[in-house]
Image 1: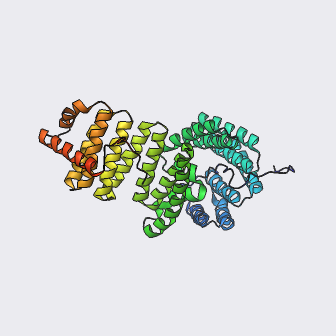
Image 2: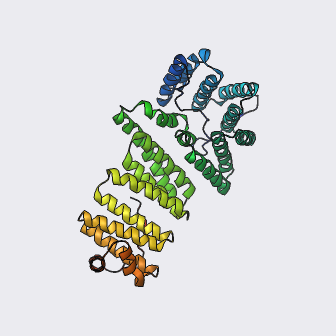
Image 3: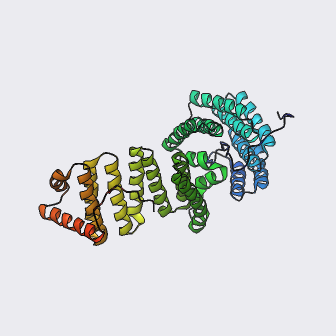
Length: 403
């Protein structure tokens, strides 16, 4: 249904339209021929060979069931979008919409409406796109389908972003991301954030378990790029942009099997949420980061992570809980004979207690976490040594650690 109207495509780099809602999870239900075309075309997508990928997907259409044909057509449309060819994508997605309506398949109809909205975005027709996303969202609620709701909501968020309604865009993005995070389909969040080629790369990792070195190489560079994007946004206090970038960093690092980069992404997400005042989320991400670091990192890294976790707990308002976290970090340093970090932890513990009016109760609070009177006195002595060596008291123990 292409028309003669002159299209004005959004400038590249100025605004990123949403991604097509391609179903990138491997389809066990596909028959052998269709699955072969699906896998071959998807592998080719990873190499950005869009025209070849479209030809591979087309090979499976003759033997495909209606559901399989819908998935293959979506992938073909995504290739057209990636080639900056929205007009043929529009024709393809209109065909999938017509088929979905003939089959009374509300889920497929919602996906087709969303994909049409994406295409209209690329054609610069944002008003039309917004209407299509709204229709997709209504159908997603009627099914109900978390996937349809998440994609349609993210589409509406990008429309708000394009209109420079940043608060509304951030709220919609957060809603979509939380829905995707809670979904049992582990491929939904990467597909929502990263688009067809990177999203599929994460979904297909299960089929490539023997290629760790390749996966590591493939995932490290995108993760680093997203990290830089997040750091720039964080420094500019653009916390919603930072949050999105660090989520992308986390997803790509997870697909590449890079626990160190995953842990760093989780820690940076925690700092971003702390800047937004969302302490439950900040502490959750710090806890996840710490769990990873306990498995792979050196004792020095784990000791620092424990101390940062304690400081964040204090900042969240759980001042007594922070004492227990500091004692845990202190014990860890003691066990690994890390004197410098042990003294630093002790100094921060005392400073945090003093700052939050707990100094008189500190001996009792520490005893509740297993420190005897002698051990508590030793903790005070070690903390004072750190202060003496570093020239003064600690003004704010609840410092950020972005490394």
